[in-house]
Length: 338
Image 1 (tube, rainbow, N blue to C red):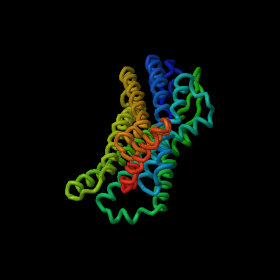
Image 2: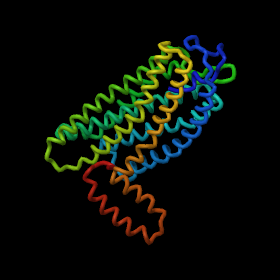
Image 3: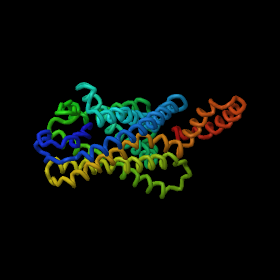
Image 4: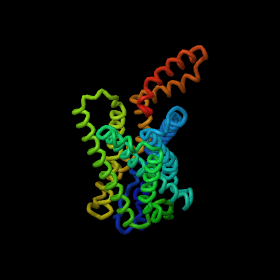
């Protein structure tokens, strides 16, 4: 997954792999270096802060018995994994890979696992809400804590298995004036890109089917149940799609470039720009979920206010705490952070 700087640094023909024609991309390199430094620094600060707050609220104030909370918890861990890789990309774009061969494999695999686990837990989150709305009796049978543990282990195991090509073929390679962390063959590059695309499309086919059934069931039902979690999960899914879909499209076009379907230099440079811009849009998703919880999740917002009130004078604290506790008691029937 960390092949992002593979093709932008050298304009010397001898430094290019055989499957890529020489093309001076120095202007792309200057843009990417500045763009990555600014955006990754910003996203790292907000991503770490926001997702740590989510984990803190779930651990301290909420029950991880709820499947929704379990999936949100793991989704935040996946976002933290991706966020933790961002500073290394900054150094990589500016100085090359200076962290060694072992670190190259480790961070490449972590980045890949973060991507796959994020989409998996989002799919499981949607499917769980689908079962809860469409077939509530069936949902009651799967609310045992052991079932949640098994789903969590399954999701992380699939993510690790999907990252095996990265684990095997990603390696540190030394060039004339730049050390890279990249795939050492063209075939695993194509396998990785197409695997990401297929994974993304299949997951969203499942998600779209689930929400089609959810919306249809809610329209036919006269029940006055609280469907706030459905609304929030739908927003999370939509944001995830618009964050990662452009990146997956760009990577598909990059795969076509690797296969020499089009080799025009200017077109290739435009593709490089698109790839890096969409990559940053995808990374921005790491700090968007906590913002969504704060604006849409009632209980999350109250827990966050309760945390902030700890820094106010004592005379304001008692009144606020009493009011928040009474509100939380009312909303505890939802069983999740929403």
